Length: 252
Image (cartoon, rainbow, N blue to C red; front, side, top):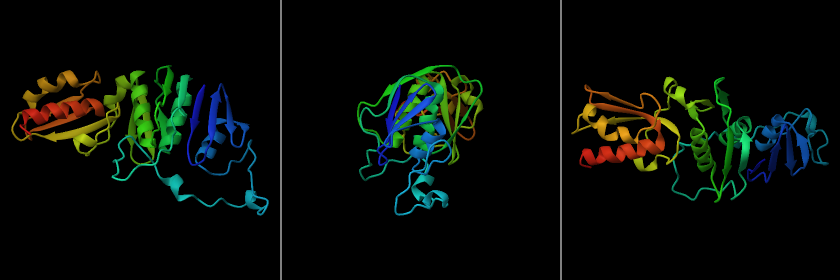
């Protein structure tokens, strides 16, 4: 069973088998209906559109686009100096041996991105519960991590898409180039590419020092002699630790 509430919609979602129970308003729906409600837009088809008595013709009129629904999110969104809103209260994400398809559906709603799913994904069950309140960014980082632990890597593609691939195939996909300062990199299994220009150390010699911090993803560290660069293609938590070692070697 999966439980999730996304504020400010105050919508409890229970995915059990092929049915979706929406509590507020309570109704039985398919995943498409749940998706539309989570995005805050009218639902048509098998689920009736609830309209205000003051505007009986609203159901037949073209819905006004909500600018907020166009915003997309990822694990690499830069943290802001102001306090971020707590969109997901503690305990509202509750995956208990959930099917992978259901977990990816929730990921898609949180990111507001289309998740493209590789045909070779392993058949796994996902368990995850948020003990503390999370922002969308933190929820995506947690999902990146639990999916990676189950052999699935999520890869950001531009501003509208995510790719879900088997972790063994991640190195064959284009990883997003992230330029956040090391201290702002998420401490999660979010797949990325980080380019390091070395000033004092030789890239080929640094590899042996940072290799123990790399994951099992093939070709996660690539060193160039000229220019003296390191390409780190791995999960962000691993890259944070590699950058810490590199900083020591560079005398920073």
